[in-house]
Image 1 (cartoon, rainbow, N blue to C red):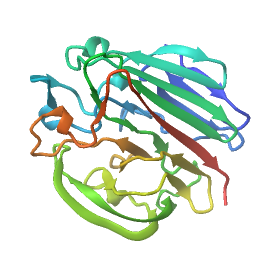
Image 2 (image 1 turned 90 degrees about the vertical axis):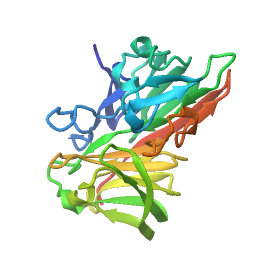
Image 3 (image 1 turned 180 degrees about the vertical axis):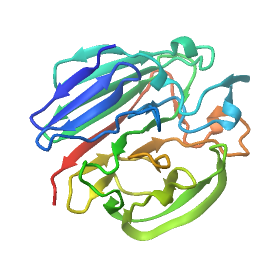
Image 4 (image 1 turned 120 degrees about the vertical axis):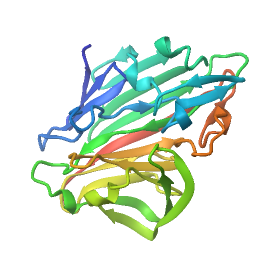
Length: 294
């Protein structure tokens, strides 16, 4: 399965048809690979697309139209090969329609398109969801999950990295139990802050899931070093995650979040579920921008 390579004068991106997943993003002038390499010792993913659910379902099951079904955490889009429908060296589009081997677990009709393009120091990424049904709403959530190297550059210091938001934020951290479900508790995380100094023990209890961010972008890197800025306007939740001892940090804007521990399995009631009417479409545009040192 050959990856698609896109290139501008500043960036080279590699996208695999498996999951339409961004697997590499190289900054050419600094000769720096920005993305985690997907070492299964820690985590085999790099930048999976989360669809049709974000997070875990209670006991991995849900109810739709009176029947019970099962789905894995973060859905199945990352586990299927997408069709390449366009490629020109700077732009590539991939399409996933219905669910193939997951059809019995997610019988809803859908078309999911992912388009990547590089221009200058930026990688733009657009996701389009279409409901081809003439009868039923399409119920889904969607999230991005890119993992960046931490430290971002080989000479960097992991504890010298921060997250910077594009405005002062006051938000809450959602408490998650050992099963990956929301407990319903929200803990004040910070107040009127626009930056967060990173340290490994911040993730001792798992992902930091924040609700209530107003920023459209988050910037990751060292104060005087190379940085990446992830633009994801309108994301109701952001997750930040790593594994103990792993040299990566995931910046995860989400339209959707895990089930609550007291969920009744009704998919329509799952937090963040989007109900897309028959014949309608939904789009989300993201961008990864590389910022110079200093």
